[in-house]
Image 1 (cartoon, rainbow, N blue to C red):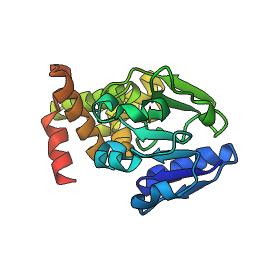
Image 2 (image 1 turned 30 degrees about the horizontal axis):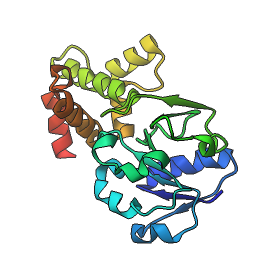
Image 3 (image 1 turned 90 degrees about the horizontal axis):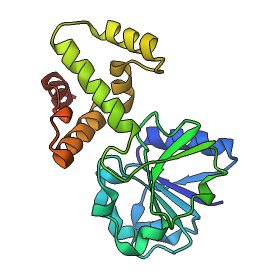
Image 4 (image 1 turned 180 degrees about the vertical axis):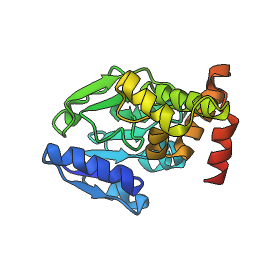
Length: 215
């Protein structure tokens, strides 16, 4: 199976680890203008939600190609043309979320994920197509609340991280996870959620915003 990957090095390396479990090779695409020239079965665009103008590259994509787009920061329906609906899957491709035994995705009922099922992931978790998907929404809210706790002086970073790991058995504490995901991604997801929902639950902690602006 011929697989192409577009995105930042960290995400591509995570994808390569997963694909190696399924004994699949991946070709890294640096010049996206030539994406249609390759004979690919699957294209992974791992930071599409930060480069939505690339949708123009995919408009004439062969119907047999499965297109997997990172859509955590956007609503897929807002950007995807009707001609691509039956061959496109939205995925959670944030750092730390690709190299797992399960893949979080969204798509229409007409899209088959058969091509993904032998690549290395054991489980596939279909979620509603919406900004933040499911897991990123929850994790970013936890990170935001941790910043509020730190800002109020209730506890320091180390104690908050330790308490979360011991209390919930999460693999990382909120600040550890923020560092791994990237504070830029956390801030932009929370900002997208706030703009999309107008819900005060996604109000960004001023300390988090300050650290984002300094990054």
